[in-house]
Length: 261
Image (cartoon, rainbow, N blue to C red; front, top):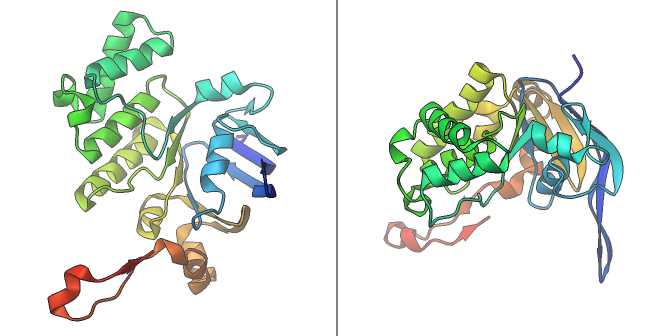
């Protein structure tokens, strides 16, 4: 079967007052149907820029790519119909109810009012927040809000789900719940998931395969197990700015210890 996502030489250069900035320098990658791909790299490596190109939010300045057989440049509407996207910051309106948010999303995808209401109920049941449908989105916890973000991205039953650092800022319990949800989307619905993350434990636990980027280029690729065996410490070095270094000056001042990222 052809890959669900395919990119060859995908590139993006930004024009600034100081001259061109090559954010993505020619990325080649393939993602198979039903695969969870972990897309890793340090800050500024080009992860979000790549994801935004693959979801048609940012036009590429070089290379080619297709999502579900649809070309980014010549068929952006087809790409958008085939994919769902959850941004780092989410996109819910805190002033309206969860039900209203989901129904509005359904209507934007041209569902009838009854179809949108039924889809909202279905998503809330499948993603385990049916008891929150009449609560305002602004009153949700971080983990609940993330489930709503994902539900909105799944409204039109996309083949591919793009998640940009979905668990950032969540407590350990909420992170574990979201991991289970992502696995369930793959295992129960066959959804292909493209996941960017800074957390090595998350990438290891969730991903069928990893692509690691640095300075806008792919520097390593393979299964988590294979990459750890082949590269070991070099991967840790590439991702060194994703770790927290905490320095303490004794028990009495531990709470005031500086944190470097």
